[in-house]
Amino acid sequence: MRYAVLGTGEVGRTLGGKLVELGHEVSLGSRTKDNPAAVEWADSAGPGAGHGTFAEAAAFGEVVLNAVGGRVALTVLQTAGAENLDGKVVLDVSNPIAFEDGQVRLSPVESDSVGEQIQRTFPHARVVKSLNTINCYLMVDPALVPGEHQIFVSGEDQSAKEQVTALLGEFGWPSHRVLDLGGIRTARATEMYLPLWLTLMQNVGHPEFNVEIRRAR
Amino acid sequence: MRYAVLGTGEVGRTLGGKLVELGHEVSLGSRTKDNPAAVEWADSAGPGAGHGTFAEAAAFGEVVLNAVGGRVALTVLQTAGAENLDGKVVLDVSNPIAFEDGQVRLSPVESDSVGEQIQRTFPHARVVKSLNTINCYLMVDPALVPGEHQIFVSGEDQSAKEQVTALLGEFGWPSHRVLDLGGIRTARATEMYLPLWLTLMQNVGHPEFNVEIRRAR
Image 1: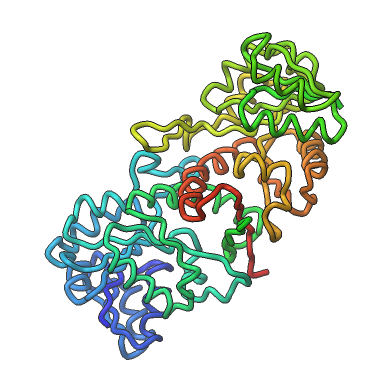
Image 2: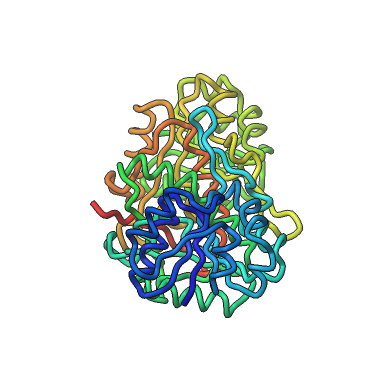
C-alpha cells in the first residue's frame, strides 16, 4: 500500500519508518521539497521510503496520515490539497496542544476537535481519529507496554475505521484492543484526554504507558 | 470521624452511606432543612446518619465532601459558609458537566477547573480533588471492577491528600492505587477526562469500569 505521512517530526518519522518496515511505500510530506529531516529519513528508512511536499506526498498516498500538530493540521491539509484527499482514508493522530507559560493549552477544545475540523473542511475525505492517546513509539509497538491496554477509533465511515483497524493490526494491535467510540465527534473526548495523559506522564516518569479499561462485566 | 456530605443525589447518598457503614457520623447537607431525600436517607442509612442544611452539615463535619454538581459547587459551598470550611479538608468529587442539546458540555474547562475554583474561593480550606473519574458505586467499592485500576488525588496540601488517601483506603483503595497528580491545577486534567469517560460508558454499556495505567517500566 502507498502511504502519505504528513509531518517530519518524531511522530511522522516513527509511523513512516514502521510502515516501510512493514513493506509499504511511504512518502513523508513536509512544507518544503528538500526538508533535511525528510531527506535524511528517506535515505535511511529503507527502499520504500520517499519524500516530497505535502501535496506530492498526499497525491502519492492511497491513505494519508496526519502527523503534524493539531493546531496546524487544517493549514497543512489545505496545502496538501482537497483533491489529494478526496475519497481517501485520512488518519489523524494529532492533538491540538501548545504550551503557554509552561501550561498545556488545547485549541479547539470541548465544543470542537481537530478530527471534526478536518472532516468538516474535507467532506469527501474519510477521516478517522486514532492513536492520539499514546506516545508514537507505543503506536507502532504496543508490546512495549504490558497488558491489554487499548486504543480508540472515531469516524463517520465504518469501512474507513475497518481499514484503520487493519493497519493498527499490522502495528501489533489486536482488533479487540481497538475500541470504536463512534462518530468523529468522539474525537473531542480523546483529544480532551491529553491533559490527563501529560499529567500521568509526569507521574509515571516517561511516556511509555497506556490505559487498560477494566470493567465489572 | 464526623463528615459533611453536601448533596443528596446518588453520589452524596452513596458516599454518605458508605461512611456510616464504616462507623462514621455523617450529616447529609441539602438546600432545605427537610429535604425528603435527605430525611429518607438519614432514616434508613444507620445510627450515624443525620441531615441538615448545607451550613449545618458543613458546621458538623470535620471533613466536607462536595457531592453536588460541579456547576453549582461554588454556590453550594458559599451557602455552606467559608467559616464552616476553614482549615478543613474539602474533598471535591464533582465534575462541571451539563447536557446541552444531547451533548455533554464542561464549564469551566481547560483554563480552569472546579477544584481550582473552590481552592481560590476558599483559600483556608484544604481542597482535594479525587474520585471524579469513576462512578459512585465504584468509588466506595473498588473491588466491583477487577484489576489494579487507579484513582487520582490533586491538591495543594500534602497532609490533606494523605488524609483523603487514608479515607480512600477505608473505601477499599490500597494507597498504591491512589496516584498523587500534584497541585490542585491538575484537577483540570481529571475533569477534562469526563467526556472520554462518558464515551467509554457508551462503549462498555454500563458505568462500572475504570482505567488501569499500564507502563513499560
